[in-house]
Image 1 (cartoon, rainbow over the protein chains, first blue to last red):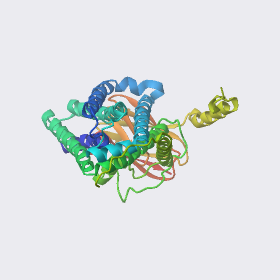
Image 2 (image 1 turned 60 degrees about the horizontal axis):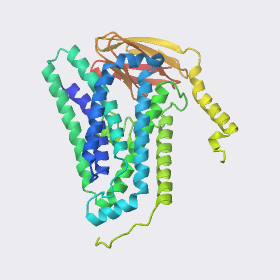
Image 3 (image 1 turned 90 degrees about the horizontal axis):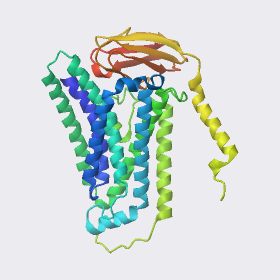
Length: 279
Length: 117
């Protein structure tokens, strides 16, 4: 039961942190909850389908079907987060102005709801498919009573979701006019994490054979299996011993998205009418 | 209309070269394979000795009816292996040392190590 809970917790945690950050970044946007719920729903249904199809998927393309699917999922999620980051940066001034004026986050709306919903769907799909396979395997193959296993899984699911909610609630304490800066930075790091995982998948598929050595090894200091490491992994993509390729992808993704966001902001910045506000 | 940079012939040739170089490494001759099975949620053999600085393939046959996930932080691999299925996992070139791996779905019993020498 404990083992079941732990694995479900780990997978849920990663998705829940992702959703929590996205939800905080889109706080106050019209229809935001429906879009995020849609993303989670599509991801969950996709997880069941993918888990059911895991055998044919595994056999695709000389055995690298899983890696191809993962690359697709990660690339889509990465592109969506990049688009969101750039869009928000380009509109930061109006959004902050709105935030100051009406005290809550966004009134101008957010043109990237569909994009972040898609990113959420991809993340839930990735973590969910593995969880479904694990639980299905357990139920069919374990001596433990199904009830106990399901209970363990549910506890893991709830605990993971609670931590996702905590990061959302914690970000709610950030002053509205600073929220975009904070959440955009978090999303930028989520994008870095996706890029790093993409690098890992490229290596695993044997598509890139360079820079496979570890950039560093912190596994004695902060092992991957520890709770702080899991949390850091979920938020900034921490790994105790990432490959050099992962590090390069991480840094390049963050630089590219950060610089594009900056360029967009400078190009598109329109004068915004600011009403005087007591700070 | 001005030619865009990626439409110019030399640039597309350069891109093709870079791309080929990127993928080139995957067109190598067959790597040495090391076979391993998963049985009753255990890796057999649980210790595999492989040569250093070479690309090798682990051929893992999951003989259980339940799926397993081959995972290793130090080898940076995670691959689902459905019940009854085989999976090829490319690793290396590795420096000498011990690289632990485990079955994520049965961590209590499914443990192993790749010893590189």
